[in-house]
Length: 71
Image: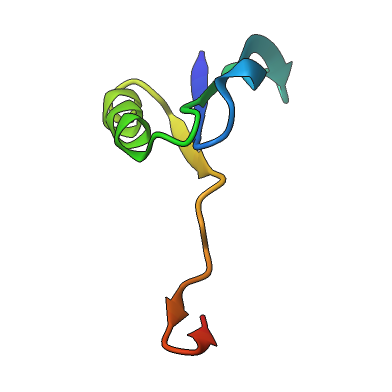
């Protein structure tokens, strides 16, 4: 079984876990929210790195302010 884990800075109230089949392969899918705790998110990423086949990180700021510019 393939394991897919999504770690997010979002609310842990929206966490879920289920198994499904796709193209004949069984998958375990899990979402883990950290309620904005970046340290907890990194710890979960490290923990699931060894156990998950695919790991995603969500709700991360992708815009940075440098002086008056946003990149």
